[in-house]
Amino acid sequence: MNHQKIKPVLEGLFVTILILAGLGYWFYPYYLSKTINPVAPQIQPVKEPTQPLSLAEYQDYLNSLDRSQPAAVAGGIRVLERSIPHYSGKDADLAFLAFNTFYIEAQNHCNETFWRNEALIAKIRSATQGMTADQIHEYLNQPSALQKDPEIKEFARQISSGGFVLKSRAGNFYLVENPDFFYNKFSKYLSESLREFLDLRRRETAEGFTANGDLLISFKKIGERIINWEVYLDKYPDSPLKELADYHRQLYLGVFLFGMEDSRTFERKRLKPELKAVYEDFSERFSATKSGDLIGRYYEVLRANDYQYTKEVADFLETNQVQIYPGLQL
Image 1 (cartoon, rainbow, N blue to C red):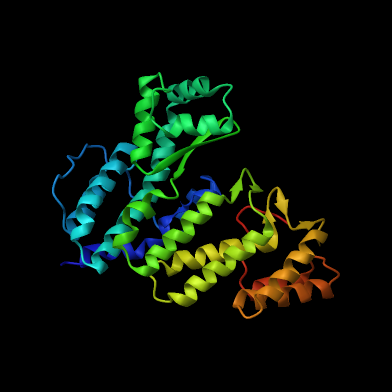
Image 2: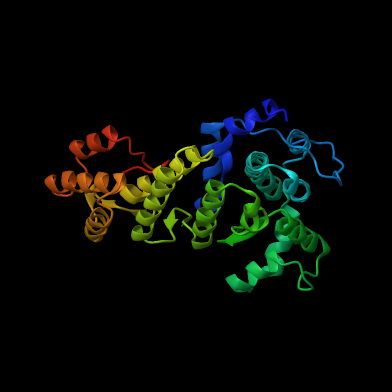
C-alpha cells in the first residue's frame, strides 16, 4: 500500500473540528484559517464507484468530490461503507481520518451554498412557521410526507444521508454534524483511540455547547469536559487526533476561565461570585490532574488580587499559555 499519498491527511487532521458542531458555524472559518487551506470544491460531477476502493483510491475519490453538495458527501460515506470492511486496522483509521477532514471542509462549503439559496430558505421558513422547536427539527431532518414541497423533501433526504442535521435558531438555519451518525457507522472498524474520540465528541455534540454567544451548559460541565480531554490525552499520547483533542481541552479551558460574550466569568473585571464555588470545587475534585492544579493556582492568584482581573492575573494566564476565546474582550 502506498501511504505517501495519505500524508496530507495527517498534516491536516485537526480540521476535523466539526465535530465542534456545538460551537456554532461562525467559529469554523476562524479555526480553518489557523490550520489548513480548505480544498476548493470541484465542479464536475463524479460517478460513484460501486466496488470497494483501496485506501489511495478512496483518497483520490474524496479529492474529486464537490464539497459544496450534501449529495456528494453522502457518496463519500457510501463508498467508505463499502471499502472500510476490507482495510487493515491502520488503513481503516487513515481512511476515516481522510473522510473526516473532507467532511468538515464540506460542511463549510455546504453551509455557504445553502445560505446562498434564498428561495429554498424562504420555502423552509414558510413551511415551518408556527411550529415548535421540536416540530421544526423533525420536519427538517426526517424525510417524510410532512414535506409537501419536493425541493425541501429532497434537501432533507440529502442532508440526512450526508450525516448532517439542519438546525434552526432565531430564524436562521445551518448544517451541523449528526452526533451519532459516524460513530454508529464506522466506530467498529476503528482503533480504540479513534472510537473513544468519536464517543466523546458525539456526547458533547448531543449536549450542546454554545449558541449566539451564550453557553448551553454549566461551567461545572465545561470543567468536566476539560478533564475528559486531559484523560484522553494521557491515555492515548500517540493518538492521530491528539492535536485536535488538545485543541478541545484548551478551548474548554479558555471558556471555563473567561466565559463567552453573553456568559462572561468577569463583570467589570471582577470574578462573578458564583464562579468562586465552581473553581474551588474543580480544584478539589481534580487536584491530581494538570488542569486541576492549574485552576487551583489560578484561583489563588485571583484571591490574592481580591478576585479582580489584574496584571498579575493576566501574567499568570500568559505564562501558562491559556487562550482567551476568539473575539472575547474582558
